[in-house]
Image 1: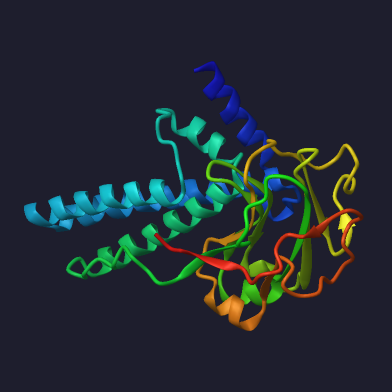
Image 2 (image 1 turned 180 degrees about the vertical axis):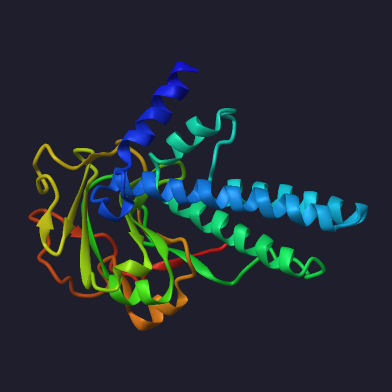
Length: 283
């Protein structure tokens, strides 16, 4: 219980009083999880109100659908729900930005689905399978060496179309490390950014740069984020909304090395992958 309380207190401390001023990944993660909690409250309220409008068979169907949604969310987002304490679960979720983005996606979608069914209780539930793409990855896992890739993000255009969360970094089967973006309607004047990711799998470091400027020190410095050695990492980009439109319009453009980079490769680094990125099927 002490650990859970400590983690929850850390989560609250990481978020600024006004999330419009969030400037670090930790702050953005905490602010996004506030949105998850708000969407959870919407889900609970809509579920209770919808249940009251249904007959016995409809209530059983609603219960089964809700349980199936939770199972699918946990499977797709690779969640461990063994923690009984909700705040501790949120605090641990905040440490893995790819999982944060995935949970934002599922929770927001479920809140919208239940709101729609509440307006029309006899509406058929949407299919659980979808052809939409939410994640892209470099084809080849890397366990050693120094690798680099970039992702161009037109924040203004994305803000006009959909509020969303983005993860850009590297991922294994159990861990993601990188940077987190939260894009809202208010961000239509933010312009564009080029996110560069340098991954040193020999020293166990990941470095991020924005429009050519390294955060907290570039490759070879003591800055950057720590990586576990000996794991197979893939370059990864994921979103809380379907990526089709943004990819077609090039307002989100991951470049693992299949095209020329905007900024020069760090000394001693190679492109993450010269082949086109692969889409990760929505599950």
